[in-house]
Every structure is written in structure tokens, then in C-alpha cells.
Picture 1 (spheres, rainbow, N blue to C red):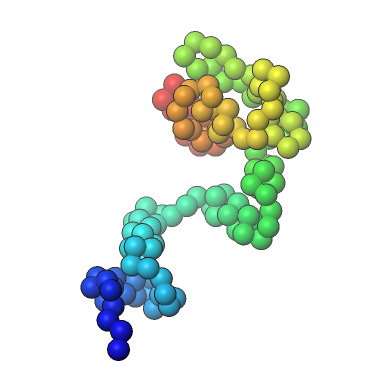
Picture 2 (cartoon, rainbow, N blue to C red):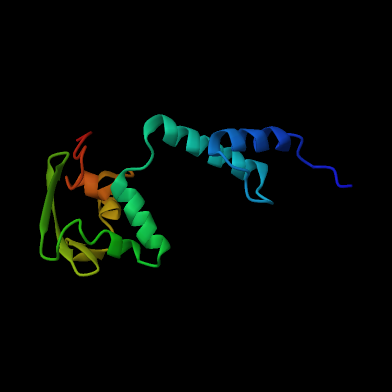
Length: 136
């Protein structure tokens, strides 16, 4: 008979069933289950991911590209302007991505990081989602 190498496993299995409501798939590691339990607990307490994010993830799971899931953010030709620390930056939405200062970018988040030096949600930074522009 094999002995479970992780003595925490029985506790984590019980926690999984209490939080998730069903037994876990076989062969999940204790570390993975602990993270999944923490995530599910957080979702239950705080409401989970926004509906738009859930829809985008479902589309990605079906094979769509990340860019295709963001297509509704702004149409090609749209000009986005954001002032940051006294400087105004203009971004053009183009097919397949974005253009700023003659350089093509795959995501608004990469542009926002380039502008600020910090990790931002690009759509939020440019005012395309709720909570836009905080921290400027």
C-alpha cells in the first residue's frame, strides 16, 4: 500500500469538497488544489471575474485569439488619447493591434506599461472600461 507523501492531502481533499461541492479530479497536487480553493473562496466572497472577462476566456478556450476577444474594445481607425504626467499620448487602433509614435503594438496594456513604467490594464488606462484613469 502506498503512503501519501503529503500529509496535508486529506485536509485539502476535505476543503475542496466543502468549497467546490464535489470531489476533485484524481492526481491533482496539493499545491494546485490549495490555489484553486483559495481562488474559489475569493470568487464567492467578491463576486468573481467580470462578465466581460468570463466571456473573453470562454472564447479563448474555444480557440479565438486574445486579440479577437478584444475586438469590441475599439474599431480600427479610432484614436485614443491619454495624458500621463503632463504628456499627452495618442494611440491609433489598427487591424491586429495598435499604433503609437509609428510603432505597432499588440496590446493596449503593453502601451500603458511603456507610458507609465507600471503594469496597467490597457483598456482601463485609456478609459475604455470602468475605473479608467485612476492613479493619474
